[in-house]
Image (cartoon, rainbow, N blue to C red):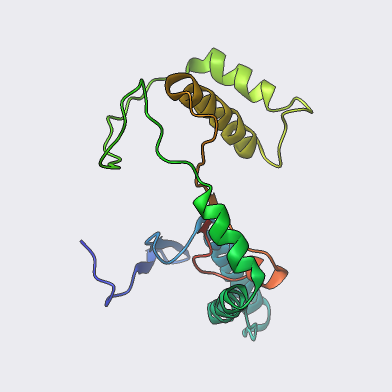
Length: 191
């Protein structure tokens, strides 16, 4: 249980000996994303390094509120333009929930049973090798694997439903400027 009226993070500096410390830092995923963790650790290391050398650190860092202002303006601009009509039409074209094995989901419920299985070392190795193929390789190995598994999922959905058009939502990091790449906060959007 958590409350949005309380801090969504814990930070503790633990002294383990006269000259050794450990930093414990825990953040809730509602206020940050994975990229921000890197930003914060690099920033802390830079500040700490300057403090050791000069005894002071006067760095300033991009504020998350700059991103919020940018997003508000971008959404306002979108609502004031023909782009809004384009995206409204695009949303209408997203297909309905497929009828799997001929069974229609009349109530649009997403309850399902999750099944897990291990790919095993041999299959995992082969998939990672496949990710290196020039026709398949994406920006990162994780993105390549995402594309492979999405393709398998869509093929399966077509096979069991006959539906030719499907849509999937995926998180995107949404750090489109150098300033946003150096800003700590939650930037992820559904793409």
